[in-house]
Amino acid sequence: MDDITIKTEVRKHYADIALQPKSCCDSDCCGSDDAINQLIDYGGLDAEIVEGANLGLGCGLPTVNAGIRSGDTVLDLGSGAGIDVFLSAKAVGPTGHVIGVDMTPEMIDRARANARKGNYTNVEFRLGEIEHLPVADNSVDIVISNCVINLVPDKRAVYDEIHRVLRSPDAVTGKAGGHFSISDVVTYGEMPESIRNDVALWTGCIAGAMDRDEYLKIIHAAGFVEVVTNKFAVYDYLKGDDYGAASITLEGRKSS
Picture 1 (tube, rainbow, N blue to C red):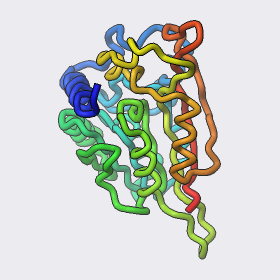
Picture 2 (cartoon, rainbow, N blue to C red; picture 1 turned 120 degrees about the horizontal axis):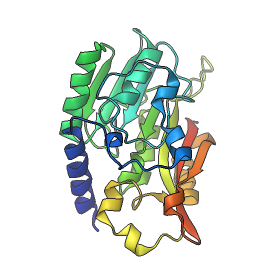
Picture 3 (cartoon, helix red, strand yellow; picture 1 turned 90 degrees about the vertical axis):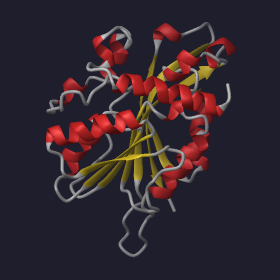
Picture 4 (cartoon, rainbow, N blue to C red; picture 1 turned 135 degrees about the vertical axis):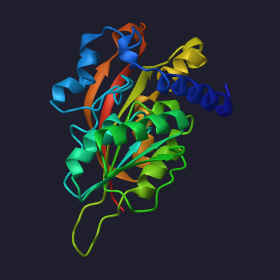
């Protein structure tokens, strides 16, 4: 499949979800793997969540280890209905700011409605592609993302953009560079072509997932250091004899 077809199918799939009154997890589409479901258990955060903000589309909890502080500027890539934006908004407080970027207009509309419903005044949602972020250079303290980068054909461009928008280290004050906390899906072994070319598995976050080792290589090549894997959990229902897919949560910091 070419990149245009992939983006068209992904946008259509998530537009349909955005227009549904209930979350994905009100159906059977989230699977029944308890180990994986624990990775996306927002209920375990003991946080008040705006109804309709959690659509059950994540593969991790990137805000947990993001180190978000009062006054920070946080950027969420593929922000969906806004769940991780709203969690970040509480952490940054009234002096901070959170930006959500999503390429699906229907998701942007739903997120903005949720922000009004929850009376969040320190957030905004921008329409755009995450490999061409509508965000200024060196303007963000922390980038988060939850199970979205796998949907983008050009993942190198995404990490180059993350590097661009994160704040650079300050030699005068000694302040470290900005950092990211990202949950995504990766693969290991040789995934069959029947999986790689399946449109439903592309929109379902599997077919477009990158090999774990290659994924880490592009992060380092983009200029990140202190790259750490916080979570790695294999999806049992996708395991073959010598291949599989897994949820991974990573941190990394801009070095220059």
